Length: 92
Picture 1: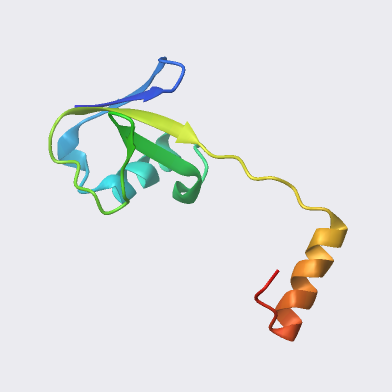
Picture 2: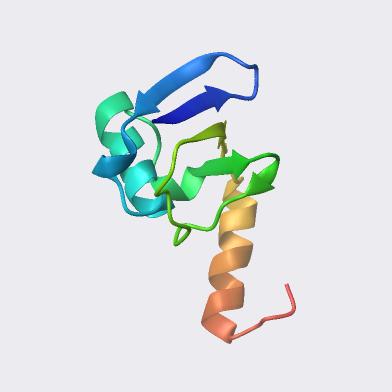
């Protein structure tokens, strides 16, 4: 079993190892079963070390889950980004 906990220490999910091939598949399953954000906003840690999406999950382990938030941008920041993209500016 893969045991997944939140950083608070609360148990979040237990998933049989045989159902998954790698961390990417685990994140997708967490999205489907528990309504978590897309896999790009999930971080899974093994003993404090972030796991790459291609890491195999072929044995029982305890993982910690971090859900990343995104910050809102102001209209001015959106305009700056659009201008930089339109002019090919990579310095900002």
